[in-house]
Amino acid sequence: MEQDNNTGLLPAKDSLDPKRFVPVHRDILISLPLVAGLPYQILEPFLLNCEYRQLQSQEQLLSPGQNNDYLYVLLSGQLSAHIKQNEADKGFRILAGEFVGEVSIVDNQPPTSFVSATQDSFLLCIHETVLWSEFMRIPGAARNMLQQISKRSRARNLSMEKSLEKTLRLELLDKELRIAQDLQISMLPQPPFFPLHRGVQAAAMMKAAKEVGGDLYDAFPLDDDRVCVAIGDVAGKGIPAALFMVRTITVLRTEMMKTRDLQQTISAMNVILSQDNPQCMFVTLMICVLNLSNGELQYVNGGHNRPLFGQVGKGFEYLEQPKGILVGINPMANYQVATRFMIPGEILILYTDGVTEANNPEQEEYSDLRLLEFINQNEKQAVGNIVTDIEEAVQIFVAGAEQSDDLTMLVLGYVGV
Image (cartoon, rainbow, N blue to C red; front, side):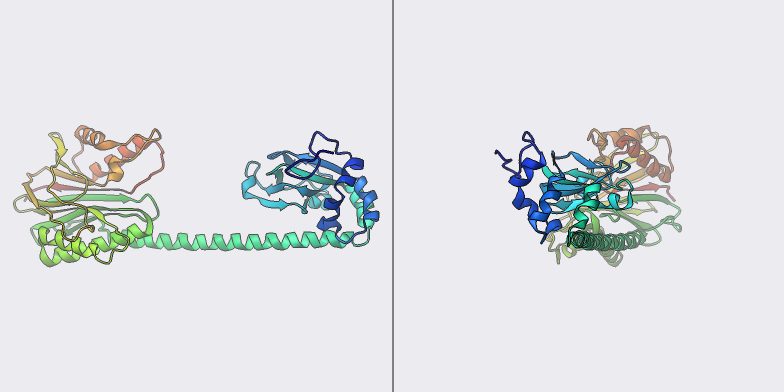
């Protein structure tokens, strides 16, 4: 008689009549843990009173709410017990020799989970009347069944313990990430940025793509007349980027307050960040110093996005940038300092590529052009409004698409003396 090459059992086209099935598959049947040690001459009448069934892969065997009258013993293939109908890959695996359906037979209640085949499978189907009236009367049968239930319960308890341990670890990690996020935010200056300097206005925001991010901004006074602002974007995301971001801000403040000179600061930062950097991380960085007494704006750019410069109602344009490469790659790199003079009412808009490279569901980028067009149509002059309006415009554009990069902005407005 022809057999299935994958299972070694009779293919579906052949009869699953017990009188034909049992003699051919005697060795498989008596090897089941459920009947271990039971004499075949006693088992044979019981096996002939059972049913045999084939399940195709993905075919459902049990469903919550539907009554079940059978104990199903898996002869070959694989089943899955799972809570949701289409999540067989997330359920408990049931392997050859194991059984399902016993709980609904014992408590006379419908099953509480779905059971389906994850492979083509053959089943020994024991109706509850046959189970109680014939099988349980065989000496040793009840012990075998209880042993199998106990073994499976231990295995599932162990699996649940591992799952619980994983959940607890994830909860601990989530708590640690929230703490890291709070620490990272505490590193950034909070408004008002320059309460003692009436000649300047500033506003900023950062929205990380993950719990912690690699974007940064900074704003601090150098003396009575000069203020410093900066924005940067560390390569990568998550904890490594956040740590490099903290290091960048620390070095920036240290060097800037020590020298109060842009050229010396950017050069020193590049050397320091290049050292002890086994992961070869780097940061795009733009640093600006504004002299409030005369409107002189000095700035350096280490591979960062070009800022927008202009005045509400009179138009904005992208500011040409001095030469400078990414900070933290080559300790021998040279950076140029550029200078221009701001007049009262002019505004500098700094941002990271999380703004211009934000994607909508069609994978279109917000782009430099859209940002320029939006800001030239904007009629609000307050720097805080500019920040919130750009953020809102980006959110409308992405239309609910998942944020893929940190989004950061800093706007500096010169009021004059």
